[in-house]
Amino acid sequence: MMFRSKSWFVFFLFMATGAIVGGLLGDAMLSSQAFGTGTSFLVQKYQVLNIQPVAVDFYVMKLTIGFAFTPNLVAILGMVIALLLFNRI
Image: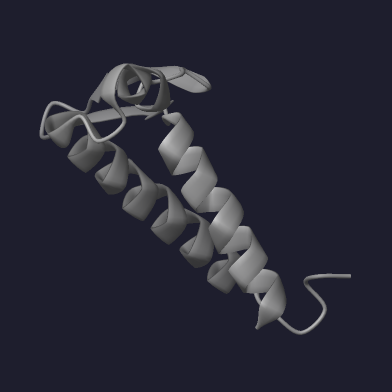
């Protein structure tokens, strides 16, 4: 089992880091057009999860909560690499 001695926090930290680094690499590839016309395929965003924002007004403060997860293929690749690295440590 992969979570026997490792914590869930470290797992989510690895996955988030992989997604962020992959997303940044995808944006860098888009600006440089490193793969020519294939770059647009790699950096196209896919909507996986979208929870519309909900606003709650407490008359003293207003709280708005929402969540959207729209990775591109390079970010997903970064998450896969992060998962492989997580399993190796």
